[in-house]
Length: 220
Image (tube, rainbow, N blue to C red; front, side):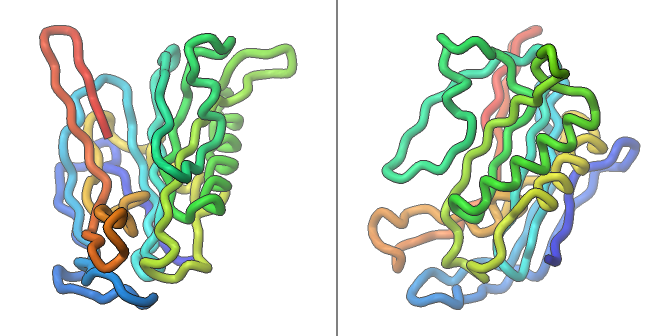
C-alpha cells in the first residue's frame, strides 16, 4: 500500500509541503465535487508536548493522523453525528477509571480504518507507554473515523501498518508544528454532504490554538 508519512522532524527548518498540484480532480465514484489536488502546509501549534504525525495515500485519497499527548494528559469528549465510528471513546467519560489519553487516531476508511489504532497501540507498547497494570502498561488510544470511501479507491483503508507509520512520524516530529490541509485523515474529507453528495466540498485537517499566560487551548 503506497503512502507517505508527514511530520516536521526535530531539527528541520520550517517548510511548505505540497503533494500533487493545485488543479481539480473529479471523484471517480459517481456524482461529487471536483476535489483539489492535495496541498498542505506546516503551522504552529503552541500547546506544549503535543505531537502530530500523518500517513497519506494521495492516490486512494485516504489517510490517518496520530496525535501523541504528554504523560498525564486528561481527556473527555462527546460523540455527535448520525453514524459515528469510534474506538475506546467511552473511556473519555468522566466517571471512568481511566482518565489519561496517550494517543488520538483520526482516520479515513470508515469503520475499516479504526484498525489503524492497532498499530498505534503496538508503537506505544514498545515505548513502554500506557496505563499501568499488573501485566504492564496498556496504551490508551482513542480512534475516530470518517467516511471517505467514495473519494478515491474505497478498497484502500488505513490499517495497523499505516497507524504505526503515522505514530512513528509523530514520535519523531518537532513539537509545536503540524502539517494541515488535505493530509492524513483530512486527505479524503468532505463537508456539506448532508445536502447530498453533489453539494460536497473538500475538507481537510486543521488545528487552532490560543494562549493566555501559562494557559492554552487547542482544537483540531
